[in-house]
Length: 309
Image (cartoon, rainbow, N blue to C red; front, side, top):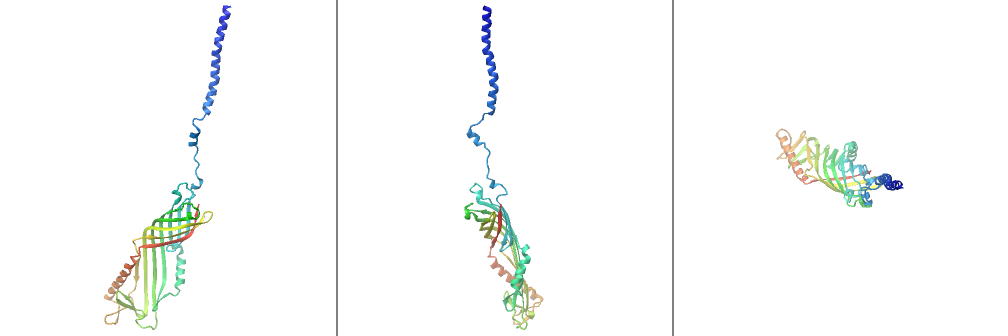
């Protein structure tokens, strides 16, 4: 009886130990599964680490812009740049950049034909003189920063103020010629530095030139006027502030040229008189250049079409 009782007691004591081991073994894997799938952060933390959704309208090439048009003082105009009105930033949506260029080279034949058509046989200046064979050559390069004060506010969003730096050149030339058959000998006389000259046979043949190699800061204003999709009309007007004025040139050949002496008689410009004539020409150009040096700004006007992606 005692033996049976001892065995029974030992059996009862063994059951909790076996049950505890069993439960522990069964629960532990379940606990591991829960830990693996449970979040390590609060909902607020999860919001902080959520993927950042960016505005697709500010990704390149959105904002890229190209334009082509004409410049009243530089010929065929074009530009490439960037200005994106979809930025969330107050300032980024108001700024843009452009690289601007222009040249008369592609339009040279058209320009010359237009000048010839306007001049015809020459523009009469009176006394039988006329200007013939005029020509214009121009080009410029510029880097510009555009500021849109109204951002993307409907129609006002196209208004801009522009600043930058320009490099450019303008060359003008024209031939001065004339002949009056049967006119008095002094009909085509002209004056240089207080001295009177004329060509024998009442013929005049000279070339006038102006060469403006300018560079300097630019300030202007303009607008982009939307048409449809990304197509727009663009307009710019401003000035380049430069300390380089146009340089004048005058080619008056001394062949067949005569000068009136102090006695009122005409004499051929030969020998030492040629040097006196050249000096008189330089003095006349210097006086004209002095007045031209006061013009220290170059006007810039452009109009054309553009496309903004």
